[in-house]
Length: 143
Image (cartoon, rainbow, N blue to C red; front, side):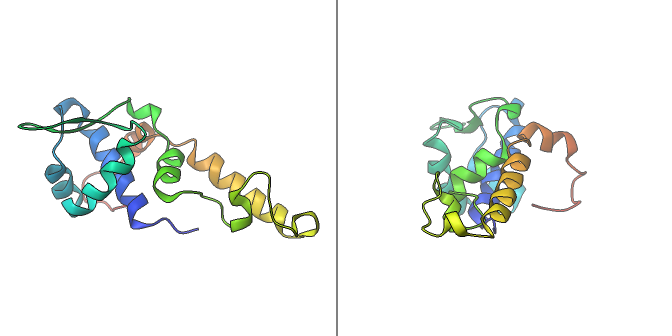
């Protein structure tokens, strides 16, 4: 499994909004500048986040975006599933129940199921607030 730029940037955008939640609506240009992400790329991510009510938007002068919920109500797992689709490590696990004709005799299926469960459990138990609480000082690295 490899997380795409879209998933990583969506997570960074939401962390930025969480970090600045007391500043009112935040313009994409400000997020882009702080995160070193193109504003055009963020404009492609916003509709994905808007479809599921992750964001509140305000148009016009002093417009921008805010989180629709508190940071402790967003998990990394839900953010990545929204932007990446399935987090399954192999295609046969993308449907439930497994629809692979070989699943009944597949010796490796339990390995992939265990990995998928581990990934899901891990990512679904990290919130934006957890990330903020553990955030390193400015300039110490990037996601």
